[in-house]
Length: 247
Figure 1 (cartoon, rainbow, N blue to C red):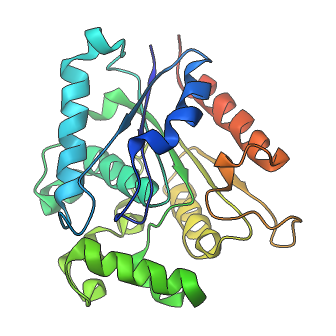
Figure 2 (figure 1 turned 90 degrees about the horizontal axis):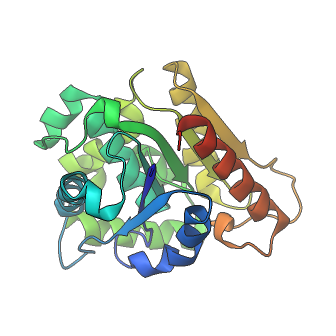
C-alpha cells in the first residue's frame, strides 16, 4: 500500500518511534502502510549520523517492500519537530543532486518513488533560530550543541546543511506543512519554508492558524486530538494523502 515513513521529533536528543505509534495507527486505518523509524539520538551520535541512518532505513524499506506491505513507488516522508527537519533533509537529498553530493549521501529513493512530504512544526532555517526567544530558544540551542557536537553550530557545515530551506527546488514533492499559532517555530520556520516551497512551484497544502487564534496552539499541536484544530489537521492530512497517493 502507499506508505508513510514518519520520523519522530525530540530536538534531536530525545524521542522514540513509539511516541508516534498511536497517530500512525490512525493513518494506517485509512489504508496506508505506516512505518516509524528510530535513529541514534545525540549526544550518543552527532550530525549527520541520523541522516545517514534514516537514508539506510529507507533503503531497507524499499529492499523489503513486499514483506512490509509497502508500495515502493508511493513513499511519503513525514516528521514532526526535529523529525520534520530530518524528513526535509531526506526529501532534499532525494530531489536535489547537488545537495546529495554536498551531504555525501547516495539517496535511497528515486524522485519517482517519493510522492509527497508531511512536515509538522519543523525547523528548516538554522540562521533564523537565533531569533527564537525564551525557554524554547535555550532548549533548542542546547539541543543543537549536543546534536552537532559544537557550541558554534551555526558557523559550521552542520548549520549550513541542516538549513533545507536553502536547497528547495521544483522537484520537491507535494508538501503538507503545518504549525500551531502558539509555537514560535511556526512564524520563524514553517511560514518561511512554505513560502519558499510555493516560490519553487511546489504543490503546498499549508495549515497555519492565525496569530490571534484562540486557543493558542502549542508546538506539535497535531498530536493533541482533544483539540478540534488537531482533528482538523488530521482530516487535512488524510485528504492530502488521498490526493497524492492511489490505493
